Length: 151
Ligand SMILES: CC(C)(COP(=O)(O)OP(=O)(O)OC[C@H]1O[C@@H](n2cnc3c(N)ncnc32)[C@H](O)[C@@H]1OP(=O)(O)O)[C@@H](O)C(=O)NCCC(=O)NCCS
Image 1 (cartoon, rainbow, N blue to C red):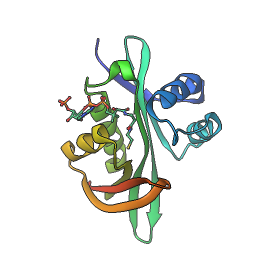
Image 2 (cartoon, rainbow, N blue to C red; image 1 turned 90 degrees about the horizontal axis):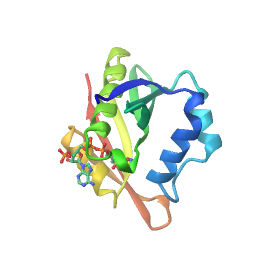
Image 3 (cartoon, rainbow, N blue to C red; image 1 turned 135 degrees about the horizontal axis):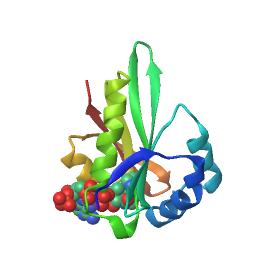
């Protein structure tokens, strides 16, 4: 069954929150925060569907800085049972395509230093680690800032 990517809406909140809890522990969004992100029409909210169920989602946003537009990947989540099937890469690619259409020059994101899967995915997809973020998530839980030039 192919993977299709559609806009995620607040109707998907329960499923997305379940996946969010599977994906993250301490740093998981609350259901309220996720609802807030889904409601904001300026955010790019995409869900990947496989076998008639949501297998993962991505949320991105665009920020204007002086004359330039930058994109940020706010979260990328793939349900455990759907991992290593290319869904993470597909969602990232779809978000980048939206960013490119909207004139975003650079895409930024953060990942936990100990998140081997995410760092490997981003490295594979052309992201460069540009800064260590000490205590970014919590005290002792560091992050790394990554960037990819899109335009
Ligand atoms: C990171 C995550 C989104 C990857 O999603 P996925 O759909 O399994 O990833 P893909 O199948 O598209 O993998 C693409 C590539 O990323 C790398 N990768 C993915 N998972 C990996 C893992 N567990 N270990 C090492 N490399 C991994 C591989 O290079 C993989 O290619 P391959 O399968 O051909 O070897 C998923 O593991 C996840 O949701 N994790 C929890 C949430 C999270 O960490 N999100 C990112 C926050 S910054």
